[in-house]
Image (cartoon, rainbow, N blue to C red; front, side, top):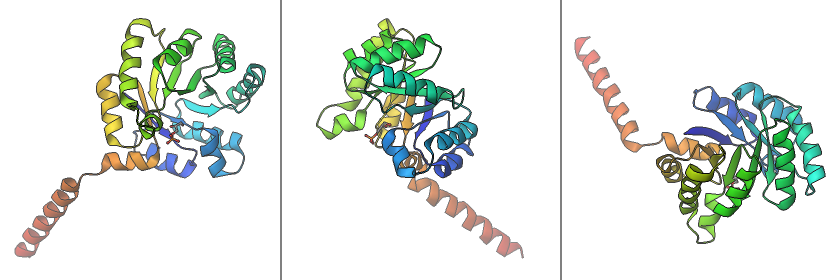
Length: 217
Ligand code: G3P
């Protein structure tokens, strides 16, 4: 399973990419708005750092507007993936952009039928939002299982990109279910590293080593 970082922060992305664990990045208008500055320059910089798929989202709501914005985003860098919302207009835009060779990520997916329709119009990725489903008392990861099963039989090659991830359990369940990609905010990636026994274990190794050196001296 590929790991994408869900962020518009060049600093955070740079730090994680230097560890060799980042396969791509997803952004959305909220994340880029938080960064401020020129969003095209930010996306370009992220592409240079990651050298993998980087989703940039359209804000138009008509198909014509999304196609215009999508072409503009795709011109920033060959690594750009155009993110469109799951709407009727979004599907039209997805079909056109995909037929032009631009990769499209259809976002705001909350059901298996939506994922299937997006796959039918050539989406490279579908982004089901697990955390936001959990927030309203629905089973976010249940949807992932449903879409993975569905795409095994009727997926048209579209990848399942698990989004709105809130913690390590979402990540590991996604992998076990056979999702293709999980996109995590930097804070969740941070949590993936943590285990108290690792810290305690390292501390003990170093202390024992120091003690042995002191005895020798
Ligand atoms: O980029 C889309 C998605 O990952 C948003 O997550 O935490 O705002 O529900 P969240």
